[in-house]
Length: 122
Image (tube, rainbow, N blue to C red; front, side, top):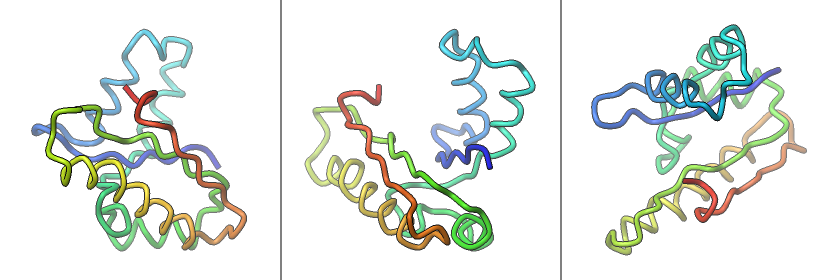
């Protein structure tokens, strides 16, 4: 059970570092340090715009065949409205398609895919 977070590295910061910084924000002050550490233990490096969301074969196998995932929440997107159309499409359309494809591969064939609109990501 629990939560698995797929996050990409960015500007020299690892996925775990990025999520750790996010969890240190006031927004997550309701979580205990133990709960935050539990979340960090479930961070997987990936890129949602890539096939199998950029995860290693080992992580893809674990996610798709071992774990009983019930919901996939997609809330990664670009909120830059000045980037070239191709880049915006890769960030906001291809990533959704890749996560939908991953959801179809899950052991739990009743898993739900939930997309959070770009307007509410940032």
